[in-house]
Structure formats: C-alpha cells, structure tokens
Image 1: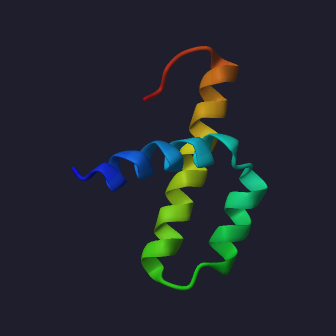
Image 2: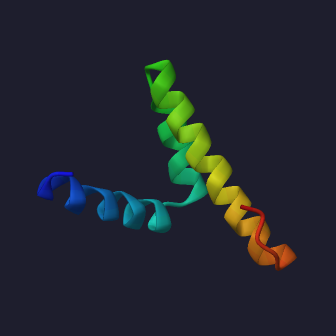
Length: 61
C-alpha cells in the first residue's frame, strides 16, 4: 500500500464518522453512477446499524 493510500483511508473513516444521515442521503440523491448510489446506500445502512447497536446495547457486526 502506498503512503498516499495509507493516509487516505483514515481520512475516509473520519469523514464517515462525522457525516450525518441527512448528508449521506443528499449524496445518495445526487449520485449519478449506479456504483456511487450503492456506495452511499451502504454507508447509510452502516450508519443506521451503528446507531441501532448503541440503542440495543449489543454488537450486530
């Protein structure tokens, strides 16, 4: 893995952590390519699952 890539991935994680559901839904609505729509849909699903884990109190992943 290149140095640039090593620095990029943690940034993506931090961006996901701070993104709201509304922001992700907006990006999904604006997405053009099918793959981009799938990407944002998966991020939304993950965000919802993590919120559910906090409420239920057990790990689902």
